[in-house]
Figure (cartoon, helix red, strand yellow):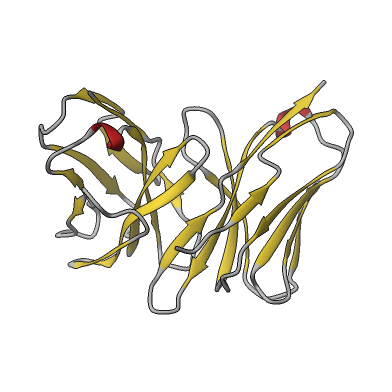
Length: 112
Length: 112
């Protein structure tokens, strides 16, 4: 079974602080997606990274795909209460299959 | 409005009573998936479909069936539900397998 380990599981920080969430696997992914999920709703896509070493920025969020396409990170600068939510990474595997492996999620709480 | 619609949103039922959770998308997407979300385990893919009449197992297919007779619909069938299938279920679709997935709002299923 392929695994995508996500850390930390929980994070509670003060407004204005920076944070990084990590996703690591022994599997190679064709692409990796980051989602954010609010209570009572389905996940919503934040970004997709495809190329090894790729860095994408979305306002205060920076996403990086590892050179070997086995890991990824999400960095939030100057976190705000509106960033509170569940962050999920999802790796897409295409060797003999076309399936997704999700990380276990990082529940972020940003305190005002 | 582009959306993925799941029904029902909530269901409480008993062991062994067959049930179907419907999923419909109006975006003409080829790739559709079913996931279950459990605390501490994240989202796990149950089945996916590349197109009409093409379905394949995800990571946790035991106890579930799916069908894809039309492009827009991808029902999840539990022939003989058991308590360990109590979970939050999400349907998702994307234009092609490697593109961002659009998720429904989820179905909370309780099997007593």
